[in-house]
Length: 237
Ligand SMILES: C[S@@+](CC[C@H](N)C(=O)[O-])C[C@H]1O[C@@H](n2cnc3c(N)ncnc32)[C@H](O)[C@@H]1O
Image (cartoon, rainbow, N blue to C red; front, side, top):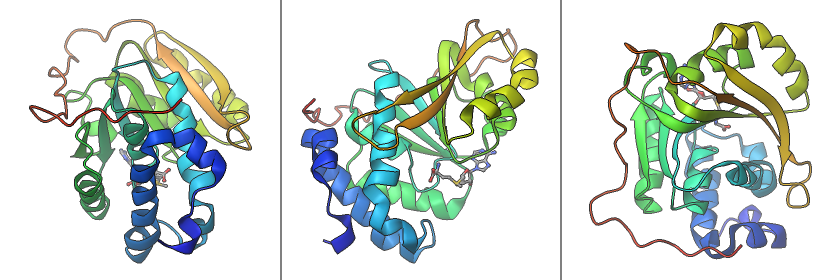
């Protein structure tokens, strides 16, 4: 195992019985991910704390059995982490760049993630094709742009969970105009994972309170699970 990819006790606690799969993912990021330029070599020593764990704690905001789109998944953050931790979720990794979707497909296969599909495309071009209960996004675009890309993908009552940094509240203020132009919604900033990750992960959550207008309806969502699917992995809480 790559020396730097050894999980801390906190990571062991957080991932529980799913740790071996998370560990394999961390190794893929550290080896293939770095070799192909999908993740910077300087990130390797902090893969667990800054990347995997920071993303994992967002799972507490996601209802059981939800359809999740990870918008701008890149090398799989946070989508792959959430899929590992929560086999009950159906996760679509939405990513436009071929090099990244190739890596994502390799991850799905090597980690045997039957609850994940990789979808190559740009968010703004798939509004008529994809629908979800939750859209996650980390480091993809400024909030006003992200809102315009993500909200049309949500079912009524669904939420965009945008992982943001220190400026989350200010970004939300800057996005008020765009929020007002969209379907009715409620937006707030929440911090998750306090006591598990330091600093806690900051999430801008935007929940849409109405259904999409007719004429913008997507095809029914396809479950990424294969027929007969994989056995559920247990999870220590
Ligand atoms: C800085 S990377 C972040 C990747 C990953 N979410 C992470 O946190 O490591 C931004 C990603 O968003 C993708 N992206 C950019 N514009 C997009 C769009 N319009 N729709 C979907 N994905 C997009 C890029 O291809 C890239 O992989």
